[in-house]
Length: 124
Image 1: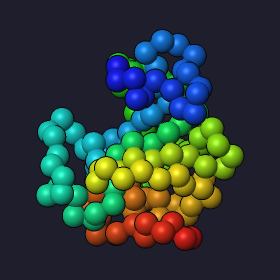
Image 2 (image 1 turned 90 degrees about the vertical axis):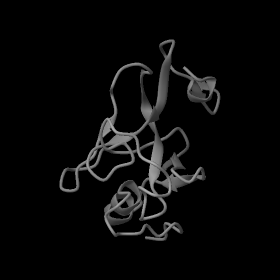
Image 3 (image 1 turned 120 degrees about the vertical axis):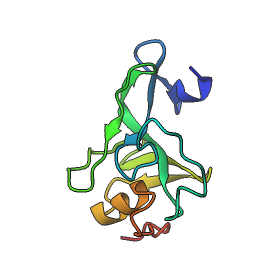
Image 4 (image 1 turned 180 degrees about the horizontal axis):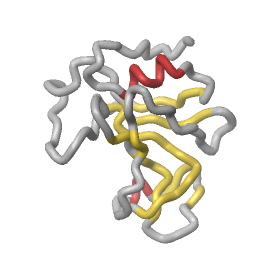
């Protein structure tokens, strides 16, 4: 397991080889299936969430990812900073996001090809 994913803000996961960082998997997400995707060719929407921080640590080798489907409720995203969670995007950029971000904006950021470009100002 890469050391980058071991801890956040000095907080180590309660179990060895566990991580607070997870990915969304499912149709239109950055991890859609077994076939690898290429950036930017397979990401026409631009800004797409690749990794998200959660407060629940999961084993690095366990497939405990966040299921994504356009019409299924999104999981609650929380980090260790008050009302904020951390994101890494497919283009290599990172940011902190308030957990009050609208569902519409969050879905646009999860979807890589829904023709619903996310407003990276996260103003809503």
